[in-house]
Length: 177
Ligand code: HQG
Image (cartoon, rainbow, N blue to C red; front, side):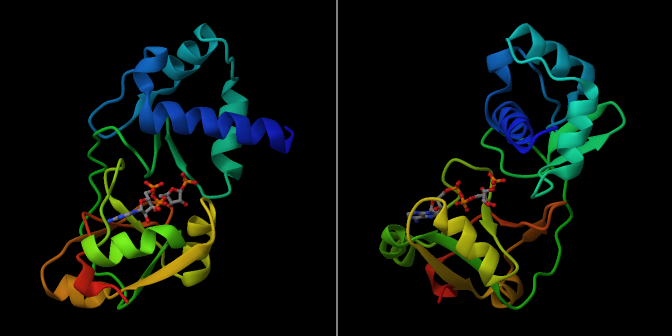
């Protein structure tokens, strides 16, 4: 499959597994899982036919391993704006985590801390390079350092998605550098 088709399918999956399943009449369970046959039917009915092989290929080669296939079910492993319970265990984070954001957001973040905005969690990266790429999606990137170890010691919970994205409910400004 060519790279353009792969990206197109990945974006289609992100839209309907993270944000708007109802747009194609798809129902996700509490954990965010869709039945694969339901997804393929729904996509075909809405003018975007995908084969099972294509789906498996996209999940396997996805640059950020955004999707999990488990038998006949599929879900996005993070990044949802709809309510889901990914049922991830609380884990101890490394001392430092990183958050990439466009420069124009830094002032407000210093004031308010990191908020989850439209998503179910604040997304943090394990290394500054990844954070820089996240921030660069929307402008000149700035990388904030999060004192995750100190936050955890103070009782804040961290989880990590199957693709290595660290998730927190919020990051108060006193933990940011
Ligand atoms: C910002 C992509 C002002 C925050 C990436 C971010 C990631 C504030 C934006 C994943 C703020 C929300 C998530 C505050 C937070 N004032 N701005 N108090 N608090 N923000 O897209 O982290 O390719 O929801 O800095 O790689 O950018 O989709 O979050 O700029 O892992 O798989 O509000 O999306 O992954 O934006 O990106 P987002 P994000 P995928």
